[in-house]
Length: 446
View 1 (cartoon, rainbow, N blue to C red):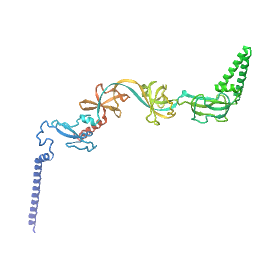
View 2: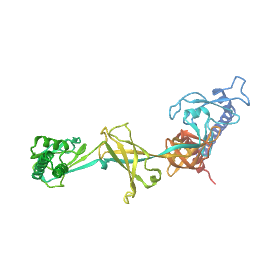
View 3: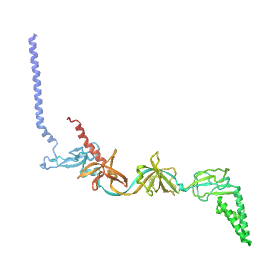
View 4: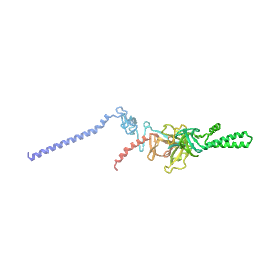
């Protein structure tokens, strides 16, 4: 084939390819036009509106919309379940001519209809002046009542022959024997008392009043010395009856309680004034709590207090503040508070850790329920009703807390309505509604 024939064949093939491409482009343009003209009618046929075919849809027709109570941005035109939380969608009615959705987003706020309020557990209460007692919580520890501690000491020198209370922690009652002691001085004192007793009896029979008075005084002095050295009235009466001095004398407990310390052993020689036992009563105990400086203005002597412990869940011990430490601990910056508690059941033990709730005197102030306040970092806010179904957040300053209320220092006025519950759901809903607008704003070019 020569060059001219080759070029002629190549030109024909190129023209054929161009013609095919032109025809294909024309067909695509025709298909696009057909879709543009007939797609709306086809969509209307596949998805008819609620009023289609009835002749009732007009300018004032009402469309039915189904929305998730928790996620209002999940909306469909048919019943079903939320794809996020699985809750059943709630039917809503809105005027399509106005374009109002089931939940309208107000900058920083949320609008809910009555049904949504019920589903979100949003309850409104009026802000008003209330009378309530504030409450302060603190940690504490049980301690002995220092006024009920008794130290038993040796009133006379001697040797311990026997211990009746022989271990720490033993319970003892007043008048119960503690130990037996041998004391030569105590034996001599008993003999002197017996001589004075006999002299008094003989003097009564005589006729000299001076002798009777002298012997009576000697007898009374000897008896007083025996009592001073630890003999009870019953022991002295037994001595008068037997007329025989006892070499071993029993020392009895002067108080009821628990043996806190045992400081002697059998065979030990003790001097006059030496400590023998420590006895503590648990009928009443102290609870020592520590308060921070910021809480001192709320507590006063006589304030009622409630004490709980993990050892007895559900049981509350009631007491009153009896003493405030006059100085603050410079290291912990806390002040010790003493609470007196009745402990006749013996449930509370010294060194036991407890939780203390201290109540101050009642105050009258503008207050909102505790559930209405949402704390976020250093700020606190509430959701305030700004119209029918319209709730907007507002920063407030709260003060003391007590009996389920917070004192309002600033940010609210009496008569305003706030959401006492459901505040966290409202806060989450507001953030979800704000997220799309903020993200779309980031992509805008100036």
